[in-house]
Length: 398
Image (tube, rainbow, N blue to C red; front, side):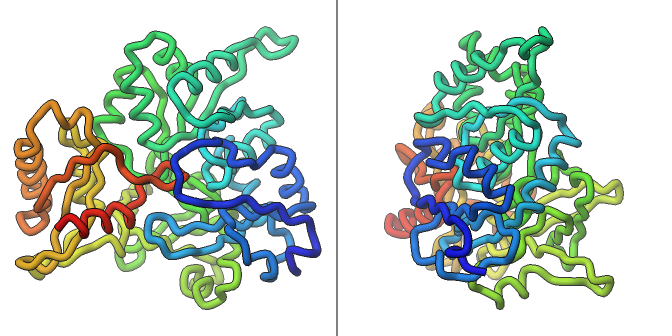
């Protein structure tokens, strides 16, 4: 089957900051895709519409994450619906606020969940801001027609957005907006513990999600897999199985066969590329990317684990840790943090605190070599840090 055999709606990608939260994708287009009438090409920059897609494809999402390696993930109508239904079973149904670009799987799923729930989403059409989020949320706090009841509210954000809202929570209206949600899903990257604690102190109901485009979005909530989702660790790598898995990668059979594998029972698994464990009680614990590792002084160092520790240091909760070449150690880690709270302490003090914390938990070879303060972190349109752009900038400074 080709894109020409059904209507193909293509939406561009790019690495600009969050602007149009809906990314041009409207809910009617998503309905048509779930009904099999349309294929959504999300984040597409052209050239992909001649490739064959499987029958039943609802969306093709172009994603490179933070690695810069392009992939086009093929998601079926059934996979998207299975994900939305599993979410509803776990946290309930209600009305959703779209605060993320719909060209990414987390934003797309807000629209899919709304369709499955039979509700109309509210869209931050002019992009995310504290004021837009607050006004949109408060406008949703009205009784349902004829029932006198208020619909349950849900939204999905990335940690940087949550941090912006928490920082503004001294304002009573912002605080009320945050507290209005039955659940705020937070994903895309690790949630810093100080940010989680700050949210809990305000009475904000957060749900940490883990997943990717290949799993139709988050499929593990607060460490617990959703219904019909299985997670296991194979040689330290997390594998996921379930009805929400992607069909594979458009135009790349080799990659599809390498990443999506079947076990001896015929069960299809997605190899996440993430390191982690599954506890005896079934809780999934993610340690970081298998490919986000440097060798410093002959020792393997997980940058994700270093970053998680660094983000526990006051003033560095939004920091990103990248690896660069080092004349002495071969490779070294560098902390890059946005200007702001970090100015309350000297850079030397913050770096020393970070080095001590990392050394205590991971050992001296893992200690960051440098702290760089920037006016603003480079981000992808999803709101995640653009790690490759950050790494290149750091490399140019050294």
